[in-house]
Image 1 (spheres, rainbow, N blue to C red):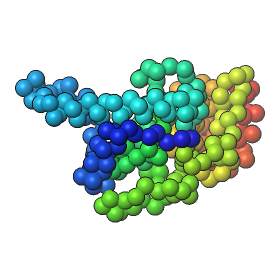
Image 2: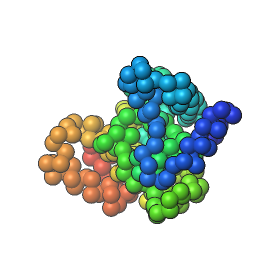
Image 3: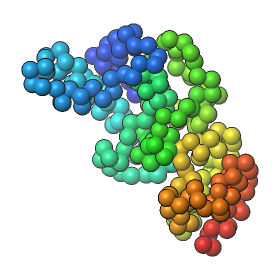
Length: 233
């Protein structure tokens, strides 16, 4: 997948942002929204310009990766041909709250669905194998540095096989440790739960589902057994 490229003005803003930011600063990803909440008297030309360039950068990022990913989520690979902001989220693979310096790093960006990127999915979970403690770390540029499938460095099909039943996604079968971590961290077991008619409210109280989860975590080869078992549900 090709990483987004910024135009001259955008690149200048991003470079300046990186120089002035330390690794654990929150960043300014949402500043364009914050600007709109300011009192009219506080909306100076400088702040207006700042909000405008951030809005422009965010828009170019989203459009670029929607096209690059063929309108598919980076983690569950479900396709939805829409530009609706509620359907697609710009995903920071290493989350921007713990590593603000990577906020606009092209290799740290992709598109994901709200379910994979939300609190019940990846959210702000740690995906680096060895998080750096440096004040201004460099972005890791190898697959081995990440616990989950990285859309810029990994081939999805080498780590996860998506199995279907009657045209519906049922199981994400991990083919590697990285595939298994992606299933767990991004909440991909939700497809199995949905097919099996288990509500999310009851999942933690269901011994049978807990047994399945343990099997999925500890022995990926048993996915075939789970698929056969629940295709008869």
